[in-house]
Picture 1: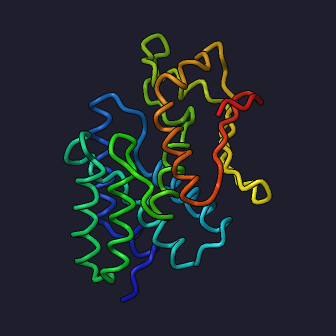
Picture 2 (picture 1 turned 30 degrees about the horizontal axis):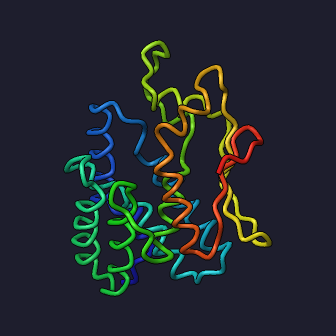
Length: 220
């Protein structure tokens, strides 16, 4: 059987791991890392790779990596990219995905976190950018604004978020509109600067530049 993105998203075992991983993060007070997040990341991976002319097969592998990238949180948040890569290997090997494709997927998963990740190939680079650019109000689960921590404030302050490609200028652009009455722009950099610098490295791997635009001001 040919293994593709549709195969993966229909797999009940994988759904269970994503659900349980997110439940662990709920107890730790993290923002949403469930199906909305992984589908958003998969969509952005597709947009990046398709926009840069990668093959349908490469796009599909990128989407699979995106869908599976956070399953390691079911084990522990610490080093979840590495544990997730090992879990993905076991899942994909059991599904009899070709070894070369498994290697591509688990390499991307194992390198997506800013603590240890390196954009070692185009799939890994696209996953990094797609994951780190998913900043939005609906990821905040805390309903009590008065008890927001900095991560809640920053995500909740994002009125709109758009990731796009400028093929002429060879630029990948993350455009955000932030309500500065909820969170000042400096707080965004306080928690996301390392992620944005990794996005810049990932963009360079793809032969692109990376720009961060907040409230119509280019900041990176």
